[in-house]
Image (cartoon, rainbow, N blue to C red; front, side, top):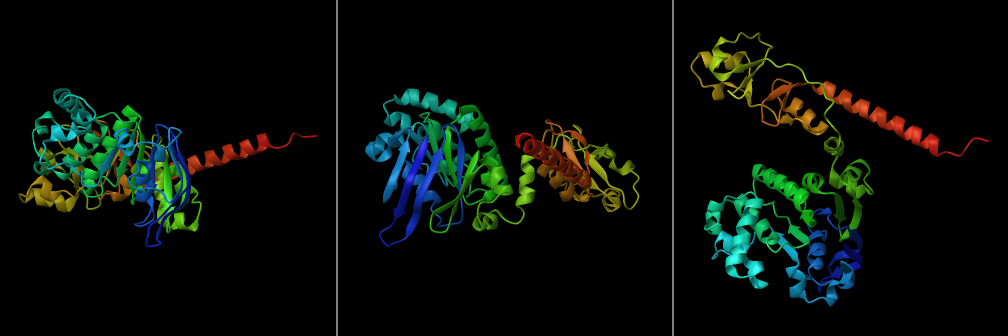
Length: 382
């Protein structure tokens, strides 16, 4: 457990970065500190491993005041990942990952052998082990940074906006990797971000910090979205928080309908009315895009399939949530969302109005359950 007890950090110029923070992080939880720039979230995280000392208050890790623990020993038991990875440029990937184990007394040969296993765990090919950081992409560097933090198997992992410097596609891949790793390793993770979507996606619990380093709300992601504790939280989460909240609702009952599809090589044989669309799929029945009359004319005129199809919207994965279902429908040029199996093949089509009907049904069920619970908990008759 990590505990903040009345922690304040005031810098010499009088700036209060963190103001009387009381917070408990349970063991094995993925906790996200989120808020605008200058709200104290990074300062709070860095006080855990004594990179910054509090002005007052107490921080405990597993019941011990961190101020009473040797700083070097403390940090060796806490993994740390920063933006842009912070790798040592003159060391190979495998030696970057082996850094902490070597410092703690593991032989270099053993540390390298264990580092190779960690690289595989974070999804990096063994062929990258002998490269230098400058020879890697940004996403690969961040994976190496995560591997280095995990190499000594620390129980606590601190992550300071680690994915903010990479493009959105790579960022999503890294987020997926973190969720997979956490499901496997169950570390106590404190993750700092300014992105509420990232916080909602990753966190078991979210700590929302506001101006002046004041903790505004500490709760589960769905509660932060559905019941903001303050006007600041409501404003920071955004007016579309109801849409974000759909990610916590099961989409398995969304109706799926047959789709009109064609293989790319058979596209010229299709007959379409002006208002019709057909989904173009590859040989494995995976969607490539939508085609209407205009696209069909392009194919017949000699244009390629990719030039003649409209890019499809997002896809609704089998077992996905209502947010994914609704986004698939409203982002599709045809107005029909595409649901896919785990292997990427087409499963069926989705109608946005039916997604909203599922939402209404779920809310109706929840209201009935609340009413029944209230009635059952009331005073006994007589």
